[in-house]
Length: 305
Image 1 (tube, helix red, strand yellow):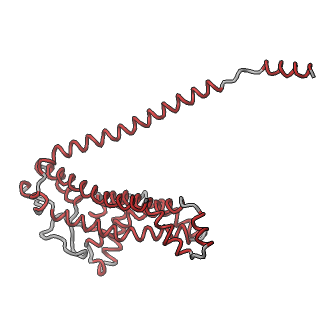
Image 2: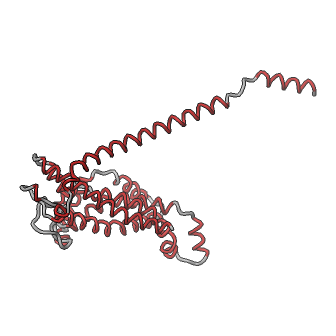
Image 3: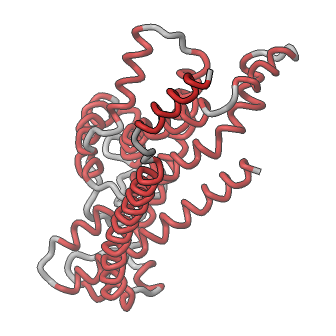
C-alpha cells in the first residue's frame, strides 16, 4: 500500500500545473473586450441618430406652428404651405392599417401556433412568413397595385386610403405574426394542461389565458411594425398616393395624401424653403409616431399587469 501511495504521488508530481486561473483571466478579459465593443457599437448608432435629429430639429423647429399644421400644402408658395392634408391621410392610413393588420396577425399566429398540425404545407407556410419579413417594401406596393387597385378596384375604391392601408398591412403582417408566435411559444405548457384538466376547451384556454398573456409581446411587435408602416413611401407611391389634393380625406374610399410622400416631394425641390418644410414635416411625423407608440406601450403595460 505504501508503495502504491508513493507511486500515485510520483505520477501526480509529474503532471503539469493547472492553468485554470490563467484561462479564467483570459475569459474575463475577452468578456470585457466584448462588452466594450458592444457599447461602442451602440454609441455609434446613438450618435448618428442624435446628429440626424439635431439637424432635422435645427432646420424644422423654427417653421413649426399651428398655421403650418392647419394649412394645406403648396408646391409654389413655401411660406404659406402646411401639412393638414397629408397629416389627415397618414392618420387614416395608420388607423386602418392597425385595424386590418393586428386582428389578422394575431389570428394567424394563434392558428399556426395552437391549431395547425405539423404538416409539409404548414412548414412551408411558416418558412414563407419568415421570409416575407425581409421582402423590400416596393414589392408589396406592386402586389397592392395588381390586387387592390386593378383587380379589386371596384371594392377598394382604386387608389384610395383603403388600398394604401391594405398594402401596408401586407407589409407588416409577417412581423406581427412572428412576434405573436414567439409570445405564445413562451407561455408554459402547464397553463394549457391546467385548462384542459379543468374541462376547458382549446378556444376557452386561448381566449381567457393565452392571448392575454401573449398580448404584451404581440403589442411589442405591433409597435415596431406600425412604426415601419407610417414611414413608408415606396409602396404608397406605387399604389397611387396623391402628391397634391385640393381637399381633406373624409372617408377611407377617397384619394389621400401621406406625410412620407409630401416629405419626398418637398425634398426633391431645389428651393431651400421646401427643405425646411420637409424637416418640419419630419418632426410632425415623429410626434405622431411617438403618440401612437405611447398608446400601444400603455396597453402593453396594462396587459402585463
